[in-house]
Length: 248
Ligand SMILES: Nc1ncnc2c1ncn2[C@@H]1O[C@H](COP(=O)(O)OP(=O)(O)OP(=O)(O)O)[C@@H](O)[C@H]1O
Image 1 (tube, protein in one colour):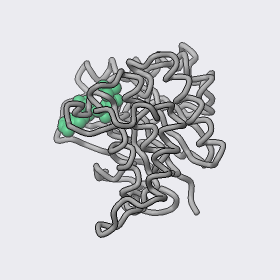
Image 2: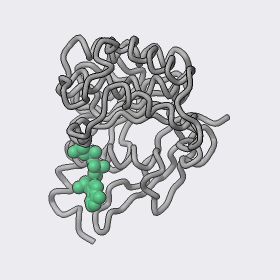
Image 3: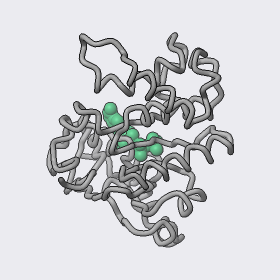
């Protein structure tokens, strides 16, 4: 089987905006990779490409040696979205959201079975939300909201986890819980990709880091990538673009 993530020379354009330009990234099993880049550098686009939601105009994406759509179909990929992208007023309970992680495994004709319910209970316990299982998702704190989605990923038993800003608006306790669960998933062989602005947390959390600005400028240990001169390169690439890089 191939690596969890193999992205090669991927280019994505939204109309006239070049979001990714020959980006390449390989993430192996059991690795936690931090994806860092300034606003608009293409992090969400890279996630969309991995999830098969955006088709690159060129380049190739293979997940576990197969097409991304297949990995999504069989429930190999779990996604923890940015909180701003979720409609928290939607009338769902904590337990319902976590159960969604099991949908890939349930056929349309089958209701949630004992195994699904026990996977949900187990995931809720791991993120310490058992007592809030029946609560509406809109009535949770920022840290609790993130933990619900992490629980969904755990219930899914995904082999590749994508997390978009998992620590923004999150209390320290939730951050510690989420970090240790991610470490645990990685120890069990899952690959974890985390888009984050939280550079301080990175060296302790991640095994490797990728610095993105349209392309992967650097992929190395977190300490190396976070050296000021390397961060400055990414910033300079972004600053150049403001000077006219968006044009045709
Ligand atoms: N649907 C879209 N239509 C047009 N342009 C888009 C679309 N989505 C993203 N873009 C543009 O593509 C570029 C990359 O956006 P993307 O959301 O991938 O960046 P990001 O690194 O995730 O940003 P942030 O850190 O702000 O979330 C940006 O210039 C953005 O404005």
